[in-house]
Amino acid sequence: MSTLSSTHPADERSRPAAPIGAAENRWRTVDIVVVAVLAVAFGVVFFLWNNVWSWLSGLGPQGESIITGVWLMPAVVCPLIVRKPGAALFAELVAAVVSMALGSQWGMDTILSGVLQGGGAELVFAFGLYRSWGPLAAAIAGLGAGVGEAIHDTTVSYVAIDIPGRVIIAGVEIVSAVLIAGIGGWLLVRALRRTGALEAFPAEG
Image 1 (cartoon, rainbow, N blue to C red):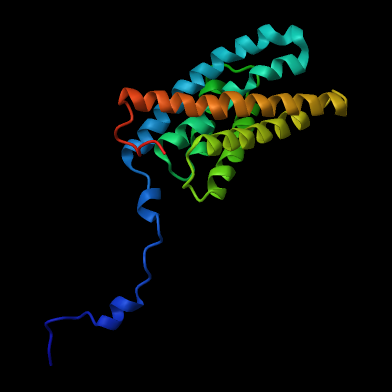
Image 2: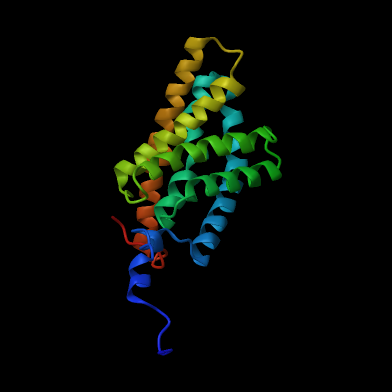
């Protein structure tokens, strides 16, 4: 009786192959740290941006909505950098929590908003199987985040406004999301790559 090997060739054949892209989708410590740090930084920006939003209150909800794309940037920027499943939702949620902790005027509702915004972008990247990271994918992810924001705002924040008014608000928010969070986020990541600050992450493309 031979005891030199306990592994039969058939055993090797019966083992399931690792999913394609599994290694690429696995989070590294550096990914977690960078997304967390960026999300915290965006959370501080969110808190400061709340004041800018308040200054525009005289323009009405439609005017305020022009700048809301800034609040969606983590949901696009962080996934474009680390390219991992869950990055959009994780980043937007952490940023929302930080903004709330600093004293956001919307309190706990900030977290609900963050979940919907991050979830909207996350769905777009998931639809592309976490393999599309170009400017078009970024713009569509911004659109997804904007849709999440519009759903929240038209059903929670602006319920007292008539339906045509809410439709305009939703449209302006989505455009802001595509331009600021989507295209603006992609340009920001591209600029960071050119500085060499993102050498630990996948190259542009």
